[in-house]
Length: 457
Image 1 (cartoon, rainbow, N blue to C red):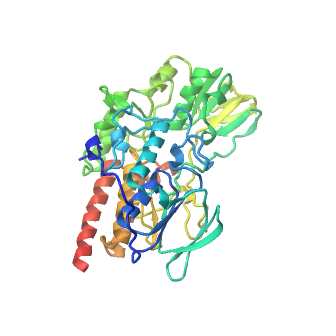
Image 2: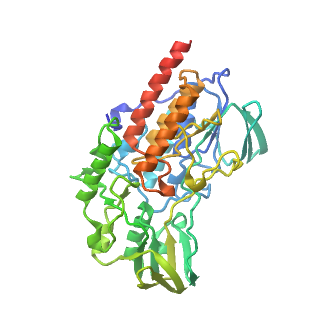
Image 3: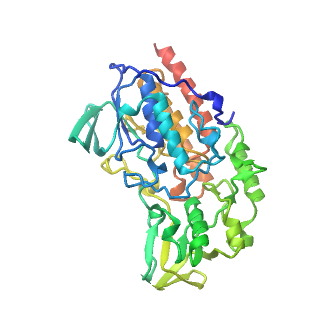
């Protein structure tokens, strides 16, 4: 059945700390955002000794507005694009009084409640930056941190990387000419005050680009949406309910899931009637873009659609079709780079955001290194990070045994190649997975590995 967390599925609250089993591997978790707290909870419940290091002073990562860690992209009007029951952790539903799509402050409150409910806040060390992670000759991991206690170096048997992938802005190559106005990345956008009374050009048609263009259309002197590649824009509500309630079982093949997305896209309406070019890809071949307001703002003429920027001339932007717009602010909604500042690039890197992993979790060349939340689902990351974390905990506790290395590499290559065939070539699609299919596939592998582990005893 598709992931749908109902209120009655809440697990009991933790009343006493879970005892660590000192004979189990010692683990380092990097980050206490949504993926990091999923990892910390799984390890805590399993009794696996670990340290979780968070650069800022609060949990929640990208969902914390003005996060003290300095890298959150959260803006004032941000809300989730996955409905609450589909975003929630499996044993901790979101509050019943939340709207269908929660605001960022509600998501942050939910994460705070999650940590308190399961009683593992004491495992997180705040105000601490992971500076360097190195693999020792004996296969252990050396982790150097700086924090309130100064610089420290600790040795771990495993490292779980949960540092997120929406914090390192990707800027495009500079357009020809000189622009005399201000340029910011969408990562630096916070409130409509930055747009008020200005001539704004938003570059990019992803979810944040459309959100910013909609907000600009309400307060700016003029708003232009520059589009290099058009997208199918889905609606968030369908027949009075969140659109993602109408989903297929995870065991369905990719072509069936793509067919469902095509129906959703066609039902949402053709964006060409509002002046945007027709997408050159089919629905399902790109990460979904959702907006309830963009059509109305385009229809009202509050947003002027244009092709990609060709060049700048002072306070004027010239587009590829020769049209011009006066501008004093350009907002580049051009995505993010996947980066790991604590790794030597010779050890781990993701050129063009491409880092092949087995089930987007396991690096087969580096035993003991795991990635949590380093995927881009057709849905929310949180339930997938939770499933990854439970799988890692089972592995470290000896309750899961992986298949032979050759099978792991074969599966990884097949999964990576399948995603490349399905989604159009772009750095934003190197980590793309189908939400329900991923959960179904990982659960099946966990069951198989549990049987292997029992047979090996």
